[in-house]
Image (tube, rainbow, N blue to C red):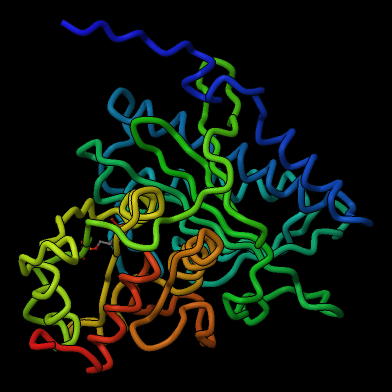
Length: 352
Ligand code: AFP
């Protein structure tokens, strides 16, 4: 029998290299930008602190009474789970205390929340889904937090919802935290994508996935196929095409779907593939929210060399109208998303 050597603790996280915490990484990157004041670095620190608190809550969820429904609905009519509410409160508290954020838009709150920050100097807007995929909470499937960061427009001293309605291309940074078999924080500031794994023994996010690149193509499609009958024809044909056996193009593709956008996107980002939540008869704009689900993920995926589309145009170019608006999403490996767009536009069909 072949003997397998167990990896050392250090090589698990760093590949044998030097350990770098998220905080050290942020400070190092800050000094690359001449004249930066440290506000943005402190904002990221506040977000990572809230993520650690939510992680702690998620890990305890089976032991204390935070499974189950909170008894209300969120801004988009979904049933709120207790952990949804808790995560929202933890992020708001951390951002309020930190003082760098002046306005929060959350899936769990109808209007954006202006913050009276310490001395009123905070100039950043944070839009977030504090706990994405929460219908998976009670059955122990990976869930996540997604965030998107913008600057308050120059000259504006009274932040309100309308100031949050900026196109995805104007994001200063975006990221997500996946609470899975390990907890990871992945973010971009428009200069590549880096991933950090939480080491629970020291309570620090450590750089584990530097400069993430998403493969140009992959072997997995991810979509809720139960909705098949309500999709428009192009998406139906693309999925049928993905199922056809063809050695030359690596088909049939495999299907994987958690029903947790962060978890499905994280897999797609690392291994390649395509995630789709299309328009359907019930939701003509799809289900996912533009401002705090699709835009941040699109920014990350584009930065990693992938592609993010509504099916007809880049997600990042959509002009926002409301805080909670929905958008169809086709996201992942560049070649696969381009192919799906061809099907949606009718440039390709099952026949050729
Ligand atoms: P919940 O937060 O209500 O679980 O919604 C999750 C979500 O917004 C996204 O994370 C999933 O990809 C998508 O909905 C799943 O939706 P379906 O259940 O319609 O497939």
